[in-house]
Image (cartoon, rainbow, N blue to C red; front, side, top):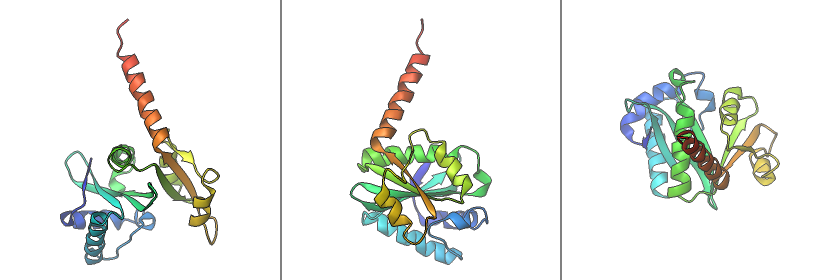
Length: 184
C-alpha cells in the first residue's frame, strides 16, 4: 500500500495530480512533468535529511495512485498532506494508506501528534478526516497551531491524531476482533 518515493513514478503521479479535482488540494504543485521530477527529487533529499517523511500510495498492483507525507516535523509533531488520484476516490485507499503511515510514524519515528490542516471549504477532505475514529478537531485543543496556520484569516480547520488516541483505538479494534472470534 505504501512505498518509498522514487523518480520512476513521476509520470504517473504527475498525470493523477493534474486532475482538476486533485490539483487545488496538493501542497507542492507542479505544472510540468519536469517540475514534478524536481519536486520529487527535493522531497527525497529532504527525507534523507530528516526534514519530512514521504511515501507513495500504491494500489494492489503496486501502481502509484497518490502520495502521503509528514511535513514540518518539529518536537515529534508534524503536518500530514495526502492526495489520491481522482480515479481512486471512494475506494478505501485513503484510510488504508493513512493507517499504514500512522503505524510507521508512531512506531518507527516516534511521532507524538499528527496534524491535518483542511480548508474549511474542502468538503471531500473534511468528510474523509471525520471518518477516522481517532481524530479530534484541534482548533481549540491546539490554539497555537490553529493560529499559526490561520495567521491572515481563518481558512483552515486543524485536526489532530495523537499517538495515545490512535493506539487506544487500535487496541479497541483488536479486542473487538478477538471477542468476535470467541467460541461460546
